[in-house]
Image (cartoon, rainbow, N blue to C red; front, side, top):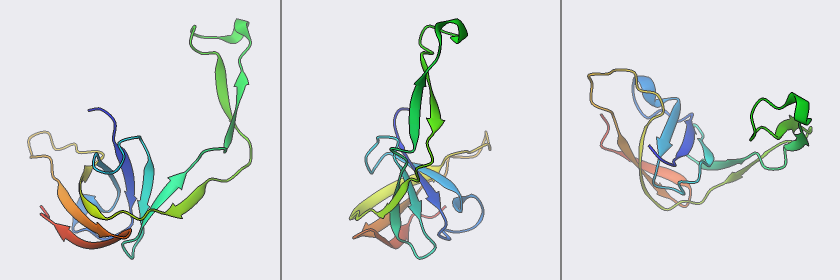
Length: 121
């Protein structure tokens, strides 16, 4: 499926599955996490600097690439407004109806605020 961004949705986009985690390939496609608040504002969630990486002793390694492990360091992440002006296509992160079409809709943003929901299923 490739790279995508995740949107944790608190905005009411319609019935059922839309009020949870969504994915999109129309923002950055860098595995960035966003939050859409109940008022329709888009925020970027940044976890950088919240963990330190500790080397694993050679005798405890379970695989050749398992050389370090992340350890929380007590710092908190940052949430900042994301000023997006474009239309993005979103779809649910989890869709377990094997024979139903994969639902999508489009969200129109202007200066980081969602102004319209297009193509609701």
